[in-house]
Image 1 (tube, rainbow, N blue to C red):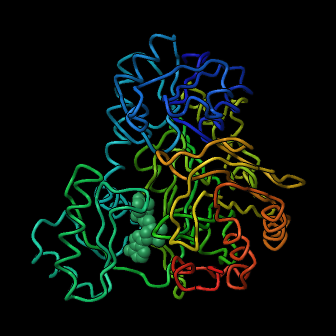
Image 2 (image 1 turned 120 degrees about the vertical axis):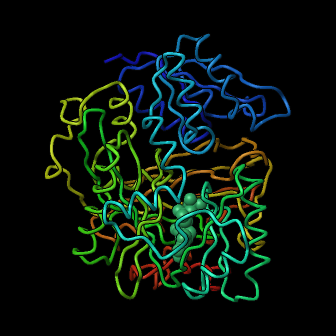
Length: 460
Ligand code: ADP
């Protein structure tokens, strides 16, 4: 066991701050890195130490440059790096570079990042352990004709996916065979540009799907538990907008089957650290299908923390240090001891304008009044009166997580909290979120992944 005394968050904004909070509580000295463009960003001031990285005019590169991050870490005697989400978090080369430099990477083993980052490999793994996947091509498809033949065999609609894709990008739904060729070419191009690989595959598209995912925590000694599920069906362009734990309106039998399937997959690879196994559940038949594993902390881990009382980031750090789940510090001796209480709903407040196709908005927050009160948790990035929202990074302003004794209470609390916010100077999606969390379909726990697209009333 190598104790962690100095921890660097190789990330920015709310997730860097989130990491510092758990590290601080563990008595670890926190270190931030920030780009020139982020020199007034809050994460810089929330750490015990902060260092500039990269060059002016390259705001993304600063957080993506592996040698740069390693050099900074070595220079400042860093013991461990938490990569957050996005940026280098799922990059096996980065994890390996940390290992080579004698720095603990707070995340899964390199081979897990390598294998799970490929959706086709992950599908094979699920199939091997008897977890159902959707019909689709076993290998990447190169020729349009092969793709079309597979699609016709599956029956339209189908979805084209980038094998190395993520963040809801590199996916195209095709309903009409006549559009297959153009979508195929576009998906290949998009995949190459965005993910550096033209590998795409075809999968059957489920029209009425719920996105249900399971949080796993494994240690380096072969112990593994799940922290139950989250419902992330409320999405826009395949990206999550509102997340709920546990999934409302989900039959116990389905819940148990999903959690068990996630464990099967985790056990098969001796999963270590935090990870999420994602599934689609057919809203009509309740059949479940594995889609992918995300080997990192996720934006929506908050809802799991609120209903289980388990600090996922703290667990990640302790596991990376070599602790067992059963140790007193981690405190996850048995699956039976992990329970959920009530419901938690997280709304992603973004600086996007829903009335204008969710175009990101920028500028100075002339006025920012935050919300609070019982059962509310806020995870904010640079959000205060006078702060400037820049166009370089993602538009997440604050994550609003509301806990309630039941789903209805949690949704009412979400609505109350969203109403309390006052944000001026930059447009936000708050009015949209308020309509969303008060919508009858949402309140009935009946959202499918098409809910936002199929509900024009949400857009004033
Ligand atoms: P990413 O890695 O980009 O997040 P995922 O494979 O996790 O991509 O899928 C993201 C979302 O895309 C899912 O939550 C779902 O809404 C939609 N999706 C993916 N595959 C299918 C499918 N076969 N049928 C229906 N929807 C799908």
